[in-house]
Image (cartoon, rainbow, N blue to C red; front, side, top):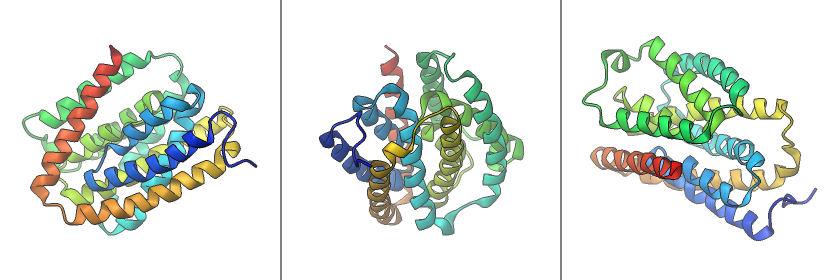
Length: 248
């Protein structure tokens, strides 16, 4: 089995391995941003039919490494309800993945993120970690991940409204993304995507992503909470504006 899939060049494969390190470090330090950046780089050189499946496996590996490294900060009670909602969202998304315009999905996602970041205060339901809130949040974000791939900012907005501080927010966000990407991988495999030929490259990208996660986690531990919150809001705003710009 060749290390480089026939659809891409060795140079671009090397770029992807380095990108995985950098984007994982970004996500571990700021809580998000790396998934969207990785999706953008993948889109530059991969066939369109391979972008979301490959992105899903790489991001699952990267987030899985973050869960292991930051496991003591996980808020497990949120994950149960998020998982239940994700099952419904993935199932629905799989049935309509080819029928919703990409521009419409990206625009709606970007506007929701901006609303979540800049609304005056979180609702009482969100602050008390209501079951319905996380079931619906899991369903909506998982539905969107089947359409646009990188829904990390949406899940981050969902969790940020609970008032979690930086380490629990980043760790629990990573676990939510592992759940979503794991389900998505199974769906694309069922639909016939050949993961095997991408195996060696994906393994290298996951390994470099874990290394990036370790570096980013050290940064997060030393980052003041106020600085983290400001950086979090700036990154989410830039991602949302980038999504809107892509529509036009």
